Image (cartoon, rainbow, N blue to C red; front, side, top):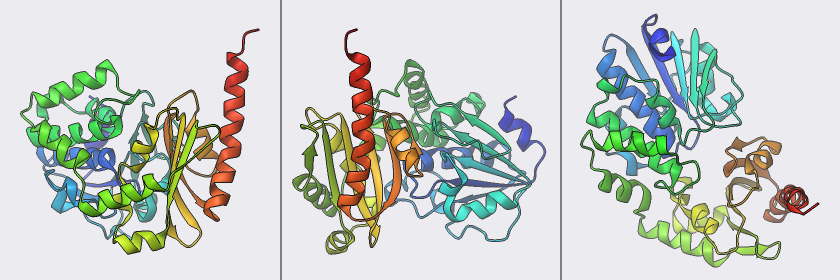
Length: 325
């Protein structure tokens, strides 16, 4: 019996939360758990609250049950937080965590602060969906639950191409495929497919990208006025950082978009020994060694200049280690 089962056997009401701007792994793990509880623990009253997710995940069972009002002032017996490294990243959901009688965090971020009463955090796991799989009774995983778990895995592994992908990751994905999911449609529809305006903003970001540190780093930025011009939101920024990352010769990629005047959401990716989680952590963010993010204030120049200092410091440290004695 997992710690999840132990906690569920002593409660009546459960609140499921994820991080702000929920991505594929957050949505997949949250809906995967929601559907599992609905099937295996029908006696429980389960509420799932997230910021409004992208409609490209509407194929997942339970998508229409996601609440965005965050049930202010309501106390639950158990709050389960998924794919969220610290309570501040829960956004409006933080109130639900604080009011809950008990809490459990299921995550894979190396920067997790252990903010819940109990925390199942496996940094070497590819995704929170991979961690969640280990807590579920495999025999009770339906085709619909499998689709959720598979979705989370492909999004956090870049369809199995990121270094976080392990043999165990592939094994779990294979087991989900054996449940009969339409894995081709899941990959194309939720990961690769883009709308016309998403392609436009991607093209704009690539066209205006800049390389520095002798071509080892690249950045691009999208201002709020440009987002308004194209009619896009934060949900339409998916994939831009990943395209920057695969630029030839690049060791570190940075993408930022303006959420309000002089405030930027920053995404960082590493192709080398750079630990971008440390860089993001310095600015109040977090994530993984090769994929992290944070929010920063100032002009685009200010943001890139401040990030560059930390990138350069790590590059020098890595160069010193690699130099022959």
